[in-house]
Length: 112
Image (tube, rainbow, N blue to C red):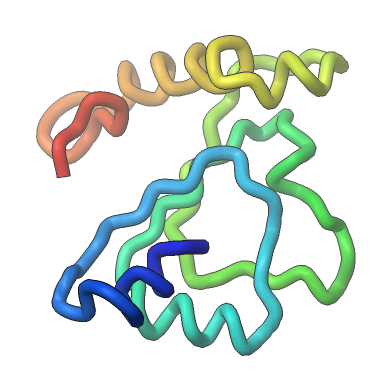
């Protein structure tokens, strides 16, 4: 949420690439417009089994224009396990990187 504010107030000439991990849905239409007019590239990384990126589940919760990367770290009913980086995200990122080798493929450890 801070990237468009930073661009608006501090560094208008930057062209950031934003990565978000497991964040909940945020933004009403005015924020979505503000974000989308200032941030060109935003990757939203979410574990398929994590409930946090699915909340709040209300009609008023909007998403900005983002590139979605859904990873699968395996199903479990343990909601904490699914949201924690080491147990809920790291195994899925390892699988994702194995399936996307080469330039532009692996996301973790990539310098942008």
